[in-house]
Image 1 (cartoon, rainbow, N blue to C red):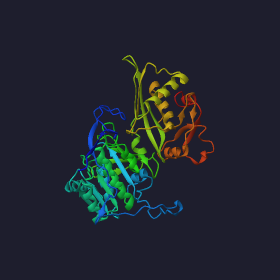
Image 2 (cartoon, helix red, strand yellow):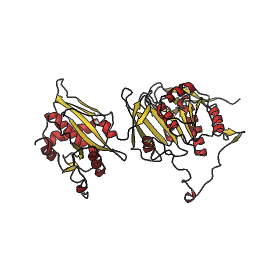
Image 3 (tube, rainbow, N blue to C red):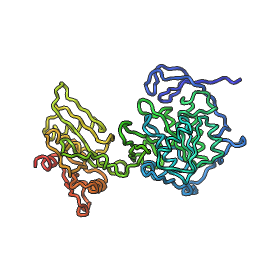
Length: 459
């Protein structure tokens, strides 16, 4: 009888060790190493078998010029937000991993996608819910499909048997942490099981050109649970974010082999499911009945999509000793830099002021073009002088107090004009070569923060 081989795996990051360790040298977490049985994979084992013979083609080298990828066009869904984030649709044979907090709507999104593709035979495999529970959730949605099949199963061998009989054109797994393979003798959700099950699904996807969506759990740190190699194995990693107490959800991509990683999709959670938001700028701008101090509108870009978002700030005298610096959705180090520029170049005394900055709508932003809107918001709150409602900003601020140009300023101007703004303040270096006469919105081109102050707050 062969000797059973074991190894120790970190349940937080997936690092492997031949002996137990109290502290993981890779991620620094304590008491996360667990002993798991490791069984060497048979050389002839495939992802799925029929009559004892492995299915799928035998790989052979081809010339790059001879490979025809047009025979597998992207699958376009009715969900424009998902298509945008994936880079233009679902790629056949791709493996997509979607992670998010419990209750955020991952299963709802995937079931909704399955119902939105009536032209495809979709198999929805759930290891967390029964068929009747999935049916109850599907009844709330407006979409319906005669080609959506549901399977409640966790054993990968049984799943592949049903795949062999059904022949689905799209496979959804909810979730990868609930699956287990008979080739690994550890518990479901362990590092070995997650890696083995993902490997089997990856081989199935590549051999049959069937797209596979995997739903993954996340850890308390917000990272996808399981070994880090899981994110390396898949083609695309999506993050579904948002506050469960708010109605809006954000779909981001952190890895995409077939498109940009800067795209953003926004959904609104309703009783009947998730509704894609076609114009996010309208929901990110607060409808105010009166003009408030400390509010400025900035034009940013997420991938190819221009967004207008609201920057809110509150500047008040520090009454508890050391002044506080707090930012939500904006880089705190960049906020400190902007405060230093305003104090050094503008003569404003923020040293004894508490400063709170918030990006409305729950977004996390890193576009330097928002620097100008942040400056205007801080100055407005500091001097109790509101920014005009019909004005928005798009410009980066340098350490010398100069307003620097940002890329694709024309897209930002068009978005501001579409939403009814009358004026937009940009760097004068960004409008070189632009035909300003074709815009109905007034473009204010300046080069320094002092000019912005004179133009807005000293009039």
